[in-house]
Length: 154
Image (cartoon, rainbow, N blue to C red; front, side):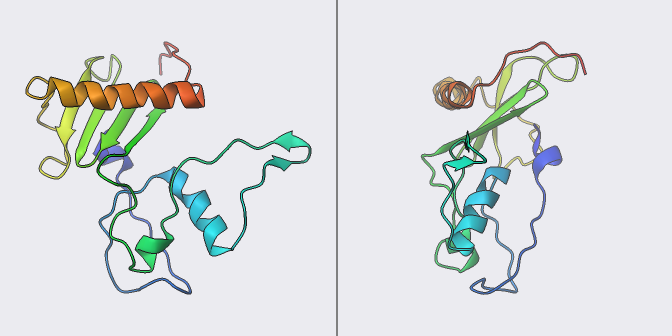
């Protein structure tokens, strides 16, 4: 869940995409499907082969790709995720993350990614209200997508 493990480049080209530039906007894997559907002028299907299709999460990045916008998410939107019992949520430049033992301290930490992309300085003691707001956003995400609390030992 650390930026070193999830900060990855995305190279994309095509009609309507303003080229030869580097976009610094945060995006997440959930933004890919809305982007593809919008670029293909398709609607998200409600069902497939007689089965209900879950609603999409994420935002289309087409306006950022075309140069109309600089950001995909506003500074008031909380974006969250989880993997192998690791948890994270972002709000603007801030990120809260929880890394379970034995790989972490099994507590929520807060980082300012604009000044500390390596997540070396925990700001949770200095900003407990902000940490609570972001963690509450993660809890809302977890309830919406049905995150299971399991004690996996990887």
